[in-house]
Image 1 (tube, one colour):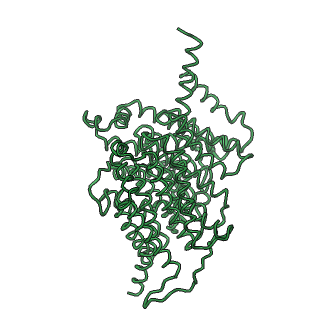
Image 2 (image 1 turned 180 degrees about the vertical axis):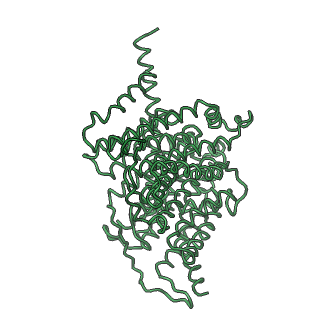
Image 3 (image 1 turned 45 degrees about the vertical axis):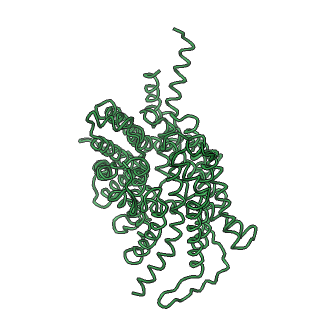
Amino acid sequence: MRRLAPAIGLAVALTAPAWVWNPYHLHTLIMAGIFAVLALSLNLLLGYTGQLSLGHAAFFGIGAYASALLTVKLEWSPWLGLLAAIVLPGLAGYVIGRLALKLRGAYFVLLTISFAGCVSLVSVNWMDLTNGPLGIPGVPPVEIALPGLPPLSLRTKSAYYYLVLAAVVGAYLLCLALIRSRVGRALVALRENETLAASVGIDATHYLVLAAVASAAMAGFAGGLYAHYTRFVSPEVFLFTYTVTMVIMVVAGGKGTLAGPVVGAVLFTVLPEALRELTSYQWQMLLYGVLLVAVLFFMPEGVVPALRTAWSALRRRWRPS
Amino acid sequence: MDQLLQHLLNGLLLGATYSLLGIGLTLVFGLMNVVNFAHGEFYTLGAYAAFAALALASVHFFLAIPLAIVAGALAGAVCERVLLRPLRGQSIDTVMLVMIGLWIAMQNAELLGWGGVAKSVPTPFPTHPVVLGAVSVAPLRIFVFVISGLLILGAHLLLSRTKLGRAMRATFQDRETAALMGVSIERIHTVTFAFGAGLAAAAGALLGPVFLLYPSMGDLASLKAFSVVILGGLGNFGGAALGGVVLGIAEELGAGYISSGYRDAVGFLMIVGVLLLRPSGLFARAERVG
């Protein structure tokens, strides 16, 4: 099952455009993919270092703005824009990480909120650069230009879907590589007992900043993908709702697991769409809040670990060996 | 010079309500070790409760404010009983996430209940300003300032002079000993959280008529409250009272002389600056934050 579940998941994901006919449903899946990258990035901090960043929408927004501004104003290729959407948020993550990771717990949370608040105010007020609340329209679509072939535009939803899917798989593998490496073990050691970890020579700030940079770069890349998908960027990308959604995806899916954020992202983008007929946006957000509390009360590990436990209990009952 | 005086006065008047917001939050943190992200929602609740009492039940303005405080304190007591009591002994991070959930749920419940259209609260005060030499001020602002000051003083006296206040401080210093001395621990927890929520509701009921009511107004209030608490040092009552005035004046000066678009950035920058340079607060004894 451990091996089978990801394989089935990937097979379903790869064939999705073939059997998802409704373009709106495909759009939902693309957003689920973008959120999966975001949730994976937040999980790197919340799940593996135990530090809750409530400013993650800032990195998402910086990535979106970086790519949009460079491609619209300087007419860079969207690929370079996407690269900038990794590099610039990564740099921001480095600076914030160096400053904020001296702090822990509530202090860290407050510092990240403040950072996101400042960035959001800049996006609204710096009219010359960001065009303020009006936003930046006309972000170019991503194109694949191979020599000798006409450029292939990823303007269609099914083509963009595969780009986003590749990003999710890439982000997943990056997290996997990090977690399985010395870095991941150091992070978990710091999360579990910082004093003990420090006593065996683990440099807390070094590893935490590393995690922050990787996390910010991934969130920024998701922002770049979002910008070239919706082709429009406004200060709304900094909305606190994005951060809240990410937190719920990670906590409900299972923080500190790799599959958890992905499952959480799919659940919390597909479910609201399925419920859209029945409920309004406010009811959805109200439900998010209640769900977050309910998960913490009744399933504090999250969905994925709970499913794993249930599965192994089931197996033991069937094969008592 | 006149302009500077006017800014300073406005800052002081605004700052008193920030202090009121801040002490509720700092009490709950200092005494209960709960980071209450839903603090701003009790502020919103207070504002809407006052509005409901005035507009729907048409009670008198002066009666609407105590009603709002009672509503906030009751809601706080319920939250403590239902959400916080079962989590006692859990890690501070779990409690923090639960409070974030409560924040989102409460805010959207307000949005569903009252709609997104901003509401204004009618007051019996004349709108034309009182001119005091070089500066002028609206009568309502003076009223808000005076009541805020009285509430802060009352909270201070309750904590330091009454039996209840002593029981509260004792409980959070040493649970077991306090329980041995006959303090009902569970009741003290509920009362403390209700007290903090009531103070937030009071700030909402007082500031609601000054500004407009809208369901997400609590977000900014939370931000201000957190800025104040960090300025004063988490858990420091006097620091929060002073921090509120500092933040109010800094905001007015920032908005007046730099850019009004960045008014709310003052709070953010203060949080960042204080946390990085003097994390135990401007007026505090040393405290470990890392």
